[in-house]
Length: 254
Image (cartoon, rainbow, N blue to C red; front, top):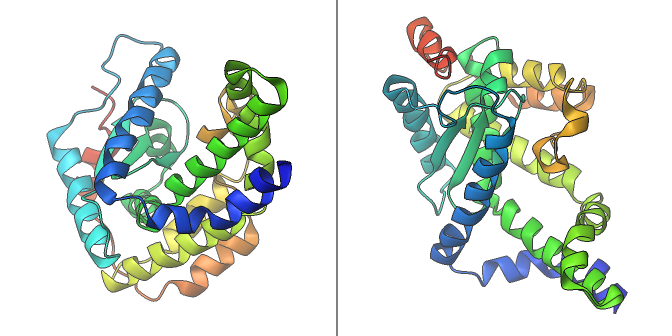
């Protein structure tokens, strides 16, 4: 039984994903998005709105998201949400949801870095990686629940089991998303080197990483990954003007 959940289910996760309609995945994606926003609300220590809503900055992100999603042949119209959370990260959720945390805007040195990260996250969406992870985590939850006879306890402990299951797959998923994202940037005539620089910088631990859930800090980086992105990058174009970067950078300041 353990073998079924630990080895067989992860092995066929991609096959199961292909059987799930895109419309169903979009609907399923709304729940983790709402849960993430609820969690982020506990980290938001001021009275400002949790969701950053600058029309100018949002339009910049939406434009690039549409272009990148089209080039990657995305089955979903990507929805980008920026949350006022002081963590340097971005996340791809089920369906069409991409979340950027404001700490990423604070740490980024250019709009090229932000759009590079956005390309990477859209690649995860197109590959349906979040759906595969959900399937594997569901299997881990069921396994623990069957072993201890407590569905609620199983849910609480499933994070440990799912982390073990994912350890052999996350590196491949990240590499594949890097390749797909950088390829799309190349097609737009944009450089991916800033993405490589950004990945290198965030490889150092975030000062508050010890108090946040693992899924908010899952993007491992290193010199090999940075070098691979640089090798894939073929263009020199910039993702946005200085004016646009200033607007995006200050998106969560109001």
